[in-house]
Length: 524
Image (cartoon, rainbow, N blue to C red):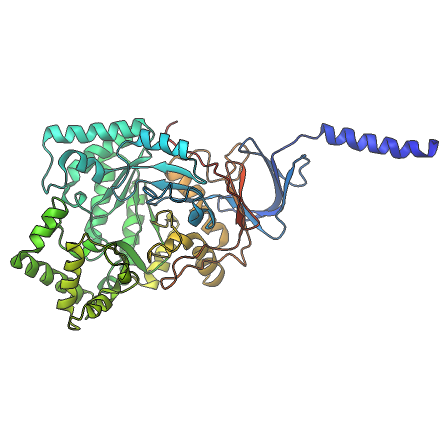
């Protein structure tokens, strides 16, 4: 009997010690922690409780029912995608799998001038829907303008501008992250800088940013950058230039010029940053192939204009001029992503569709095929027109972030750009692991703390005690984008665990069904 007392005492002592230990919801052990600052990784544990990071250190002593062994894996802050277009797809997949499987825990919506007009109501709806990701949103200038002027090709009156300012003011009060513009889209293309400056000044009063899809990303890109900087300077607002790139073969190599403009502006004291997607193709509406003055006043007006022989001739000649500037003979660079009237066009180039219609293999006939698509409501398209050299040169700039410019992808719907599935994994696999354009620590800084700082997401973007527990855990040797232009519907792999606000959302590579995302309201 007496021989058993020491064993009993040991058991009691162990029980007392366990009882005395603090507890946490999730304990991550033995990871290589990259905290988002850009500093080197270090070994450590992370304790998570009540949606926040409780402690970071070596050999943490916490009781937890959920212990993740991160041995051999990288532990990083959840990625922040600063340029998305999730509006309209949120309830199609509230799990937001295309983002979650790419390591994204937070997105910024409302880009390119397109947003929900009532940001307060939008946030309330998202709160009730419960996504797997966090959502911040900009207020879109195009939608503000449409609410007041429709698609009219003119400047607003003083009364109309006041109404636009009121929409912007209410959005900022409701927690918008700033103002966005899409100056190649109707009706944004009809706006002059003074109109945008007036709205940007309101956003600036509420600590917002000005995020812009510039007026040109091709031949007139330098003028477009100057306009963006002019607006930032006049409104005293931080500037974010979206999907920074050079479109059109005739502009390849100009990234040295455009990046230098950003560097100069920052030296002059303008808070300007940029973002990009790591691909040599863009994606937007097929309507961008047409001159903007033809696109005013809605689909009925567009169709009526395009039925006129003189307008059709004008449009065709304008398109052929642009094609010649690209040094191309056919519209092979433009590939339909989604065409509702005939989905057999999806994944086919304009050149191929023209031949499918039995027309001559001539660029002029292909231009008429584009007009046919526009007569039937238009189409989404992927445009192959950027150089790998420019992509890599821009990527080396330290104040450049990564963004998908994508919606929540719905598996097997259309032939979309693969960036909607693989943006972050592609950076980590191709440009960090294979091409060594960036270090792993630097790439993660661009995905985490840099966007958090820019968009004032105060408790995101860093692994630090007290911060929100948005965490990704991945194998740097296995992380991989699988989506391609030919087969765009494929989730990225290699992300073993993803936590959103402290809840395990991906467990050993599988979505748990957890929907613990929040709306992130500026100033609240």
